[in-house]
Length: 559
Image (cartoon, rainbow, N blue to C red; front, side, top):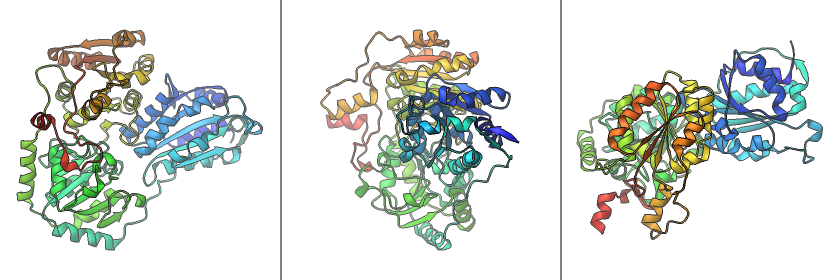
């Protein structure tokens, strides 16, 4: 059948099973939006308040559902406003297709109004980028973009289409979506080496990254941990891949990881890294990281092997498949003495906070209790992000959405909206600090426009909390540009954007506010006012060994 390029884009989206897209129209992409209008009963378009919000929403949709998220923008500033969201998805391996339109082909390269080489701009932060100048290759390009986005280690792909291509016509033949390309099968000899390491270990420790979620390997991870009889820690990206209530679970590792995880990994004789990239925020001083241990690294991306930490044995392959093979050949281990030691560390060094006043950890514990750990929680970046990772018990994959690699302030609200669109049956809550909330709080207007019942919790300490914490500890209490004491009233802002607003200043007000927000089934903003000098502990100074982790008690004793 003869279709325009714009109609081909819509047909390809339908082929790929896309039911929701997030975006913002403009001149060069008008033909695509006209085609979307005619298919609004098949593909729901969410008009965000800003293109960055569209990219974050597509990201949150993808993380919450496991499907490819889709966002759209016009040329020039519309396209460049997607860049932070694309980079966020790239750093955290999130499958996304960003579709932009550009000026007409004869006008490319002439500094035309709203012309930007967006494929060039995003080259370092995408798995692949296309600029389509011929309508005859448009369908195959869109299809390939989806296949690349979800194959192997997932990530974002950009497709830029000149406006004349969206208007030109060609024959279109429907096709079934191509299956994601599988990573080449792991080497059998590497499995043998891995089994030998596992068999000889006396004090093994499992370190989970985001690959455990991306591969859908939660069941295999659980079986592996039980067979190995080993403690389990995770990264921000690995939250939910292992049950946060399980006795073997020790909490997060790294800069704000638990003492049990950081000290345990420092003592172990085998560290098994599952779908993790040994980020600097996990490793600290690389020369001193897990220095007593052999390292077994299993990852889908060969480029991650030996990049930050040298592996004694590496298995390159899909984590789910590799663990199925290992689990089928492993004997049941008994490391009771070791696991008891690590459990003792958990008991000796529990997570603590000041309980005499309202605090972010208390808010998160109440959210955990009321939602029974079943909510999808998104966050922005900073102290509240770390507290959300520490004090909410994630029991299932795809329930914690956070910008781990890029650390994007303003990420969470758009991601929460995307998650709710993809998983409407779930309670979806975004936790943000007041500094982060200012970045993209206009997306509350998106939530109210469509009556998307997300809950936005703002932890308001009137400062940039994480930066202030560093200034307190390492910069002589010189609070340069981190104080946010001003006349901004978040409740009035939220109400002005069409949402219900609740201000909380006392502990006893927290539970009623959360319960009311859930019951209302509409977008609600809860502002929780906390002291400006609450700190996230434990903490590892930048560049220090993770064994040098300290908390408030250690600081007090040192003073």
